[in-house]
Image (cartoon, rainbow, N blue to C red; front, side):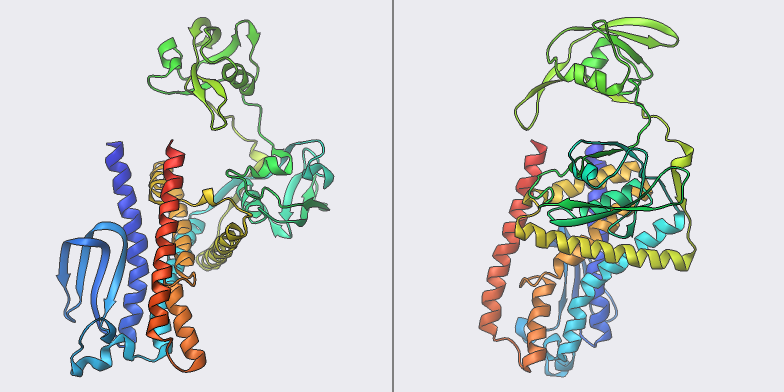
Length: 452
């Protein structure tokens, strides 16, 4: 059932993204007087097809990894003389630019609508209060102290943990100053401080943003109170249950969750005595962590449990409510930020400042889509918006075979007054196709690497 659920969510996600993108091309093409021959979601063998009153064929095909809008065009076949005025290639260059640009723009509109819905529902988060600062780190050099709340980074507000993470994501690979605005608890006085970055986290496969600054955000102490037991795990076989509070292991007191994690990780395959509290009484069980290997080749112990997270202080809770117009403006702003962030990340990847291992393919998309859907509608809508922005930006890259490549050719035509020669276009398409296929293969390789 989990596989069917994952497949269903993935297909639904791709259908929405591709459908909206292709509808953008379709809608503007018709407004520009271009005859649309086919509107297809997916490639390959048609599974479902029908026609409308304007003789456009609508298709849902077997391979759901994309779609297309086929328009009347003399370059793709003979056109009836009576329909030449409906051919795409006969339209003014500005009309062709509008048709091509409409696909990515439709993805951005979808993101705006998605963010608008999230902002209308209200946002909840927690204030980014510093828990600890590492000696000699960027944070310490900047003068940051435990207990301070990070009000802004580089002049842009950071009311929640998520906002801090996003601002730091934008600085990966950068060199130069990073500006912090902070304040102490129960104070409105804001202090400014400055840190220095030098190719910050450049090339890291899995950048740890806060650790890279040398700080941790405040969290209440996490005690070893079990919340989840993985089926068929050493913990389940030993008799551990959700709600158990670990008191000691081999006689060593376990006051914090991290104490127990460190103890278990350092003893793969070693039988240990666990003293716990269950329903008000103490109980002793024998537990043997199974051996697991980290990507670095280190052998560690795992038992298959999850911890119950403590409640955050109510004083650090942040709630944001917006009206329809304010939410729409915030949705447009968030979409603009995501477009800029996605484009800059691609540039940094080309420059070698961001690891290409961060490229993801359909397998990772499927996993994240399923996980976000299970987390709730809000999480899924946020992921859909992010993916829609990524699809829009990707299609605007000036690579032939993508929308951006067509826009490049039409922009040249607009400037010089004549189309780019067919031979040049064909060579460009071949190079572009090779590049896109190579990127897809590399993204799939990254997907399988993560699975292993």
